[in-house]
Image 1 (cartoon, rainbow, N blue to C red):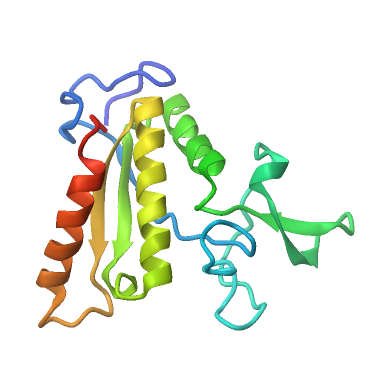
Image 2: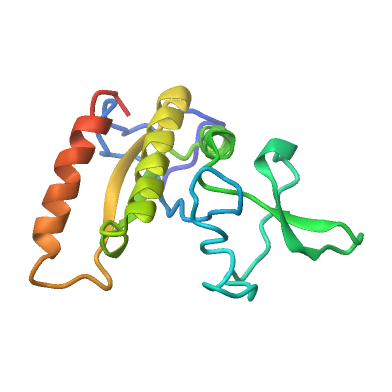
Length: 179
């Protein structure tokens, strides 16, 4: 890797908009949900299904997030107040993540889509929403993204058809922009 020229600058060998050539990309799961967010998926990925047992290893630093991006959980922090988490379904939070990427010379992301979730209407809506939010934030901050399908838990007999079916819908929804 070459050293960066400064925050938000393009890499020397980066290809044109719409190209991944020469770009620095990170994985982006976009899988955190919160009670009362737009996902209707509860505390998905924060807690194990049906329990309030944490499903994450490290507590994220949320000091830069606004009150509108924080969701109180039924645990208290060191100050005795309800601890709070973020949601990947909150436009302001996704926007903030891509602003941070711009500020730190990260060109974009591989947005993860889980094939095993796409047959569950609530989870598919959530994944579609996150995909649209990522696309809008990429446009706003001059970042790029690509879809990365996670096929774990998929049936080998149907996985190719599922990817092709999902991609044909996504391509119509998401490829009208340069991101």
